[in-house]
Image (cartoon, rainbow, N blue to C red; front, side):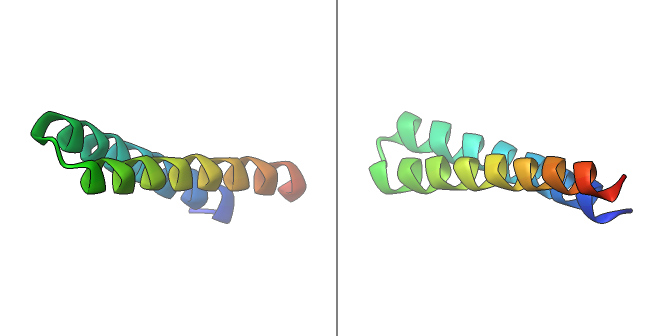
Length: 59
């Protein structure tokens, strides 16, 4: 797997995990878990964009 694809896959996974944590935190009333989920989701989006940029420069 090339670097850009790996970044995009990891980013997507982090986004999904972050969303689950965020929603779980909302459901159980745990603002700390919700905030960690939001942060992890944002980290996943950034990693996805890094994968996009790498893909552009690989060509």
